Figure 1 (cartoon, rainbow, N blue to C red):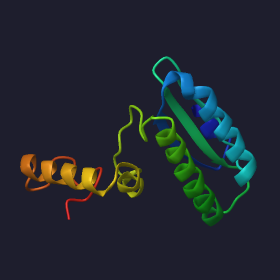
Figure 2 (tube, rainbow, N blue to C red):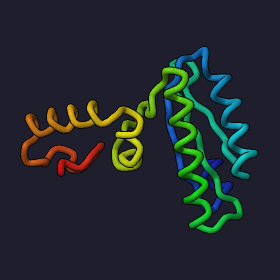
Figure 3 (cartoon, helix red, strand yellow):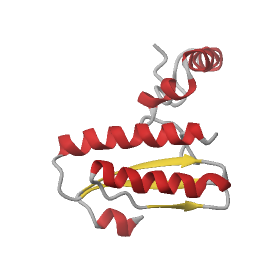
Length: 136
């Protein structure tokens, strides 16, 4: 990862998990996205358990263009993960970075259920405040 980080002025990371037999299909989609958005997208991961670390590298784009391209790529990667019965996150969890995509990926009912469970066990919002989704 450090080599990738040192090779580009701006970078974002996506980690998805997919069934092992679907890794080639996902890698093909990553290659297609590289061409579509004109962005270098190296990836590596734990192939044995289906975790892929995908790095979005901006070698020449402005911050705004990189943000636009990244949003498109991330959305497409999550779409592909869902299509192959994968998950929008590997071992890194949801946290802050994936909040904006969580409800689209899992649906409003599931998101609301998790939010209600969070309220039961953490009514004051002191455990990992605002991670995954804000308590509202």
